[in-house]
Every structure is written in structure tokens, then in C-alpha cells.
Length: 243
Picture 1 (cartoon, rainbow, N blue to C red):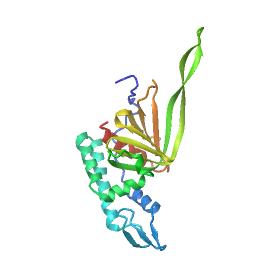
Picture 2 (cartoon, helix red, strand yellow):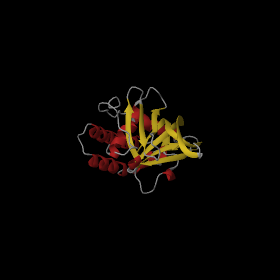
Picture 3 (cartoon, one colour):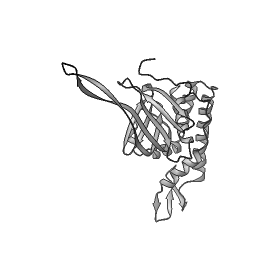
Picture 4 (cartoon, one colour):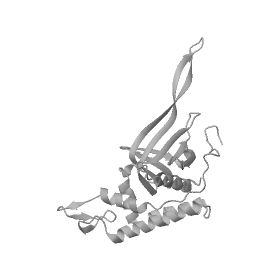
């Protein structure tokens, strides 16, 4: 472990979490946001993009198929968190499920504001929307010091909310923070620490930088009553990273 890596303290270590079944609500959010209107009443299904019928925005059969896939993913993530499945097998199964259905791919693509932000050689596995993201880092500035006016770095910590009501997309290789028209991408190999603060209801991860201090992103739900979203982000990241 290098000096840039940060370990969980005893206070940070939490008992295994269980991924909460929130996917029905997530699907309905997508349904409410995406409506193709023809003649004011006939809409297309948000999953298959075929006509859905009078005042309908999805087919019941399509909804049930996508919900079933999300339930399978939930089961795998929980099994990994409870150490009943190997990380390689868990990740392989998640990717296989994500690729098994065009309906699911349509669903996750819609949740991403700009699909071109995702690298074409990566598979989108899971997207969580309705999140707030904060960034905490130490920024460097150079100051003159000493008889010879040598310059040295001085670090000042900042903690800013960088996105509200945004999404986090997780692929087989990277995590994407999709924030108001831009995407911040971090390969899993750059993440040196992650965890979940159960009391405050937020997830966090640290990325490796040239700074000797942590560069941390904190993720919480836009709806303070729904703390499951941040926990789910943490659990999916752990499973896909093998953390």
C-alpha cells in the first residue's frame, strides 16, 4: 500500500449491508421521465421503444423482464457482500446479465444523459440516479519562502457540492460521475478506498492523485429519506472492483 492509499479505520468498518430492493421506483422514474407522444395520447415503451398503447408509456411484459434482471443483479451483489460468491464469478455474472437483454441496455442508456460519455469498449452494468455528489480535496498553490525565494506547495482543503440530482454509472472497468453536462471517469484501478457511512447515509471513494492527501467523492441521495441509493452504489462498486 502506497502513501497515497487510505485504509478504513475501525470506526468506518460496518457489518455487511444488504442491497435494498428499490428498483421498481427507479424504473418508474425512467417511465415518468421518458415519454414519446404521438397525437397526444399514443406513447412508446421506454424499454423497447415500440408503441405502448393509449396513454401508456411501457409494456407490462417489458417492465417485468427488466425488473427480473435487476432482481438477479441484486441477488448477486448481496451474495458477494456476504462472501458466498467469488469476485470473478460475481462480476462475470453481472456483466452477463447486463448484456443479456436489449431492454435492459435501453433502460440504462436512457439513464445516462450522453451515452457518448461512456467508452465504447466498456459495458454499462448499473446506473443509479437522483444523487448528490460532493468533492473533497486538497488544492495546491505555490508560495515563495526563504532567502532565495524558493517555491513550495501549500495544500488547502476544500469540500464542495459538485452535482445535484445526478447519476453514477458503473461499467465493467470504470465508474462515471455524470454531472450536469459532463462526465468524470475513474478506472477502478485508480480507486484506493471506498466505504459507506451508515449513520449519515452516504457512500464515498478516494482516488489516487499526485497529492499526498485524499481526493474523495461523497455520494448521497437527493431524497434524504432514501439512504438506500448511496448504499447500493457502494455495494455495486465493491462487487465490480473486488474490494
